[in-house]
Image (cartoon, rainbow, N blue to C red; front, side):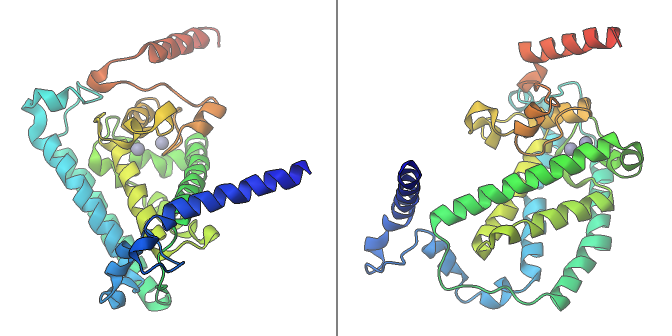
Length: 311
Ligand SMILES: [Zn+2]
Ligand SMILES: [Zn+2]
């Protein structure tokens, strides 16, 4: 009896979500029962199908988006030194981004793209079948939950990868240490990676949408969201419009948390969220804008100093 009621509640909840999400606009689409709120967006594909179904499209989209997203932050790093209002959001206030650091990080990024990403993209173009583009857009409910689920799966996969590459000395020294060459991150540090890390991250990001058989629109959006979260984690600023400031209860780590990982590399392994770090005691409270240390961080540092005395 009880089990049946729970099942009914579950079905009703899904029905309400689907109806709210997709039924709201049904009046606008000739009353068809399959009306989708994302259909106008998905219909933008019409006339561009040949380009969009090519296996090269996701690569072009993510590479172009990454460079376009990082460029404004690079400009702020280079010419924003005198803008006191923007400097008030900086996390490590005593660190400056220099032109040679930009050349170094961009150099490795270009090298990785030419030597690894370009050949991978070309072989994908040759060997992978074209993407099937369905007529219908995904429902808003499916679009959201597939995207959140894919992000949670990637977040856990990378947490395990990251923890292992810090704990196993050989892996840290020969692979992940490249990314830790910078203790004060800035935008281009996001993909300042050893090729093995780049390939692993690329593979995990690409394949975990397969678990949910995601719609192409969901896959492309998930790729862009992943890039936004990864770049935000490395900008070195706690800006009010960043995602971690939108979501309650500190669900998303953002730049403040990842900056602490570059300062204290045995903490904060999780790339997007905070729950695994908190559960497995690898969480370190973050610094605030202007390099201010909140009470939680001071307590954390004091506790760790006391613990070290007795080891
Ligand atoms: Zn990093
Ligand atoms: Zn690390």
